[in-house]
Length: 122
Image (cartoon, rainbow, N blue to C red; front, side, top):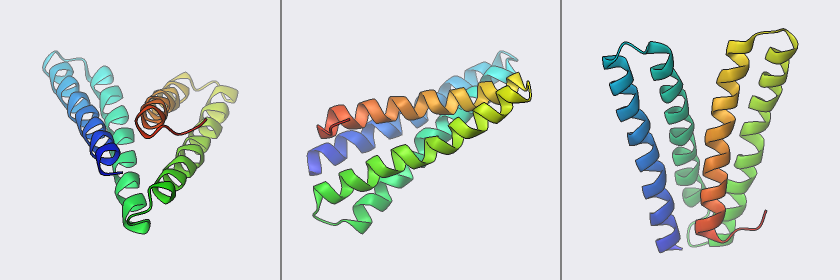
């Protein structure tokens, strides 16, 4: 589990750092909206980094427990964003819908990477 955990932690930390770097560059280029999009996605990676830490704390020396906890959160958390996106679309709020899509894209990226590293089933 240690190697899988290290790889996943490293991946999430890299994603947070990449988003922060992209955000800083976009801000320097006076592209505030796009910078905010990077911040949102960086926050999603940060959320799942925290979730991974909690999964390990609650399931010490239990790789299956870590996997189950993390996968459950990968379903629960984005479900709220799907609902928010649908509500925004219904009321014609394209900006809010786009922000929720950004969150969902980052969550899907986390999910695919976790499954690849952990060998988890869909």
